[in-house]
Image (cartoon, rainbow, N blue to C red; front, top):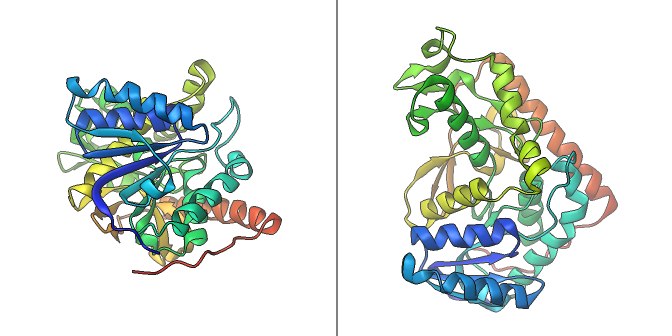
Length: 325
């Protein structure tokens, strides 16, 4: 069974901090005409939908409601934000065993309802779980996307903007690889107004590049240590990805996607700059990397491959029958 897809409808599975804040950001930006909220506790989804609906008169005209997987299957995009969040001191990859079954259940239910849209994974560890969702569903890889390092790249640009005295949107720089401890900064392709970033910052405005990477990697742990969770920045990134898909923008965003030979890496989800539009990931862009960055990307791929291998040994992926497009 397949469902007719409503392109400008978005469903969010999981009404925790990330899911509910994403719904709020999507409503404020008017990205979708229809928002459907799902949660294991249906009363929570209903309450969040009611609260958000009461904010609509102050924002954009959007229909917001609680629903089920049948409703989600009609959406053009399903955002998966279900699962447990990270604890202080816990790596994203340590979350894999705790969240993998949640993602598998979501994908099995969507497949059973004939979902034919795009899956946007926001649950951590996002790269590994995007790959689990891809393998579980049998969907084309282009239609299963992880939020990836869109957030890390935003953090990097915000930090560099402060350091350099330049508005963050004028800085072009990407964090690539795993959304986690093995991620790297692609300094070789970073620029300000077409000037290589490290050249632009030679007057001492920029701290040691290694220190910048450490700050980017430590941002989430520092926030979680004091606040208990992250929500606003990731919700903004999720909203930006949804905009690119629904509006068919062909925007370049560092989302997580299945690599098929880029930089000599295959068979693993990693974040690289991708052209994103209505079809999902349309292509991966090979940006210039120096020798150290190339090695760092391979190391990041190895970290994710080993993590996935460990959970594959402990459980079996069941592939539901799914009509392909």
